Amino acid sequence: MNLQPIEALGTVWHIELFEEVSDPTALRRSMVDWLEEYESRYSRFRSESWLSQLNRTGVFSSPDEQFVDLLTQALHYYQSTEGVFNIAIGEQLTKSGYDANYTFTATAELPPIPPLPEILEVSAEKISLQSGSLDLGGIGKGYAIDALAAFLREEHNLQYFLINGGGDMYVTSDKDTPVTILLAHPDDRSLAIGTLELKNAGFAASSPRLRAWHDPKTGKLHNHLLTKHNVASYVVAPTTTEADVWATVSCLNQTIETPANIHQLLISESGHVIKDTFIYLADNTNYTLYKK
Image (cartoon, rainbow, N blue to C red):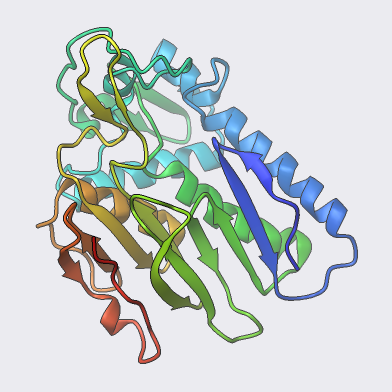
């Protein structure tokens, strides 16, 4: 059963259920409400979100447990990726034109991205941001998918489902059978480069080509990852949060060592395989690489 698509967090969400539910309309409505609340908390583009308040004032007192956990995980991934993953890119994204109004026009030279532990302190009592601003684009959607999966399990007693938030996914199973997903072509998301079977796993894909723009004043090319590496990454991990983070990291740095439970496929702009560890997922894993 496929629920009617949901627009949230700047993308379209597709939910597939592999079991019967008594009231699909009510289930979808509860998911719409859940996603709206999540977006209202953490969107950099909403002026009254918790994240915007923190960016604006530098302090957020008595934070919700979820907010603390999300930022704590961001700090953890900063350390485990040797600083490659860094959510302190909000100011740089805004100044490069990726702002709330989507002007796509740079307003100033981009300042260096500060080391996250030097500007961010997180505790159950208070969150402090010493300078700059945060953007959760590299972790927020993956975290949302994992949290939404927990919501379906705990609040709706569902076991078998697939959550697809704009291409990033969490899959349980189709009554204990792996679910086949398509790997989207990095240049044309209407095309697939192959298939992959998932069970109780998160998946994410990333590429600077997904959100790139030319500054109308200077003609300079910018992208949402603030990188010059033109690499498409596909990552499978135990959670979608991990997959989301490592998909981003893989586009930024192709040499960094990943944990053993992270599986990657990295493709260069010319279509050559840079790294491929999908082969170790399962004997029935099957995909075919595209050729330009």
